[in-house]
Length: 368
Ligand SMILES: [Fe+2]
Image (tube, rainbow, N blue to C red; front, side, top):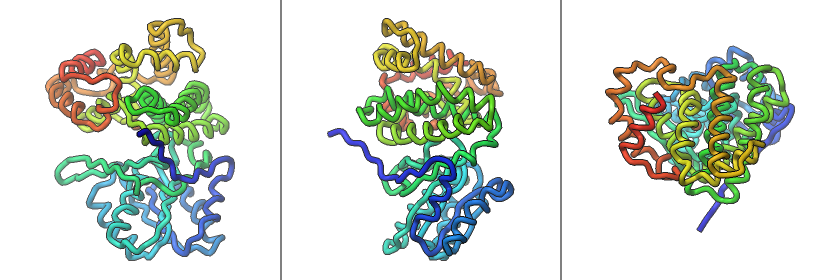
């Protein structure tokens, strides 16, 4: 049986934030980060709640990579608040925190009915529509990925005004995360016709609009398309799974703190080459859909790899892992550990080609 699951109501377009006034609620628990408060973005969202007479409590201390300890404490505040709506406002970390709070809150208070609304302020994770949230056990230094349909937000509000001030290097890295989600979803072993539709549109959007959003941050047409592309890629990969670009990026991020999107950007061309024997037909389709010559599988794959490298270079993204402030001795010493992490990563099982431990080590050495 093949299936595609999507339950999130998606509100987008200019002034999409006004959708906050359309959800019936008495009290909202708003999960956000200090920057959203300082920049006035949180106030903008709260004003819509006030206008509808909806009360609110604000938790604005979300840190990068929310800890299990913080999730437990915030869930307690949420339960005390008696809120019937949770609003996540921010990047991946704020949305992960809100999803985890909503999940554990509903487990503790099973009689409680609560609506989860996600408002992403970066165009990258697609977390506003996915069933995944990552919390970190900082005491034991372990990342805990949660994956459950209960984690899928009920509504997503895509208002590109929040992404207008993202600096170029963040726009580039998060944009390449979108591309990697879409390419890995499209070539996943678990891809299907529905995930292909969303992945394909997301790929076209990245190649058309990411350069514009990077070069001219206030190009709102480009910003809006990237926000929609991020959401579409999220819809694709939450159903299809990802691949070993993500598995390796998770490992590089965990051991060397390489930002997620940046690691994906550098690794993606190497993974396309590695997977080309098994996924060549699909890489050729991708090359065709973005207008590259692709008269054969080899030509399509080669041109796609070149297009990703060119896109990276145009946004000053390095071509090699050695340019990512990673210590070489430590990197080489960790090759075995990273290979083991990659083999155990949940994304590896949907990669089109099953890698051996030696394959992963070779890939990492090649990407260095
Ligand atoms: Fe990602």
